Length: 240
Ligand SMILES: Nc1ncnc2c1ncn2[C@@H]1O[C@H](COP(=O)(O)OP(=O)(O)OP(=O)(O)O)[C@@H](O)[C@H]1O
Ligand SMILES: [Mg+2]
Image 1 (tube, rainbow, N blue to C red):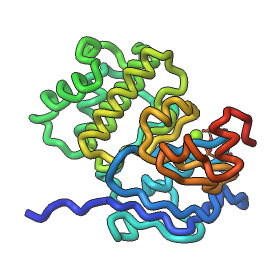
Image 2: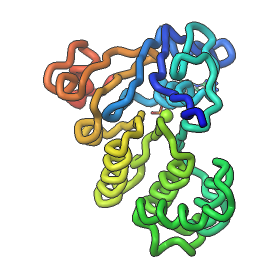
Image 3: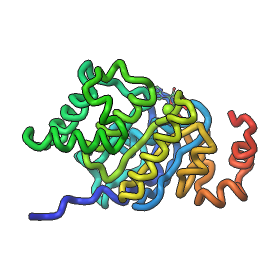
Image 4: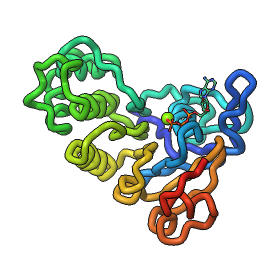
């Protein structure tokens, strides 16, 4: 049997994206390889979600090129995303995961056991039988992570996964993300939480106005930002 084709590296080369007649990403060049999480930061509307959707193959470039493992197309099977506001199916937490496993092509007979493993991995075993839509915000985020893992992704995109969570739930999600990254999954994450970027990022990409202002290893980004925009961001000034 042939090994599955790798989606990595994802190479984004001078990409522009237009929505109707507005350019929402411009001149974006970025290489995503295996390794520690890449964290996207930047003001509202700077293009973080758009860039994640590009990486997922959900948006086609209007200019430039993107390749996955050297190929112009991806079937998306080993790419997963947890969106900014995940929508739960009107079923139990357990059934949300078995549904995702079915969608990922897992034979029915194997799904229950794998769903239990995934729910354990996100600390939701106790809540397995509860209606997913009745779970707390933090629990729903963890369930969304379990559903994304059902695809056995090579690249996992997370769009502000802790945006409305309290510190305890944020910590729980961060621990799961750290474990996922340590297991070899390439995590690409958008966040407005600079503390989270410091805690999780291998490298940081600062977006503003649909362009990349700066990309650097996290330690350098935070200790000696090279651009005025990044310096202002790190200081906590408003960047518009
Ligand atoms: N389909 C679309 N049609 C028109 N404009 C769009 C479309 N999708 C995104 N945009 C615009 O592109 C810009 C970037 O949006 P995007 O959602 O990527 O920003 P973001 O950095 O994720 O912001 P936030 O921090 O608020 O989530 C915004 O100005 C948005 O209004
Ligand atoms: Mg967004």
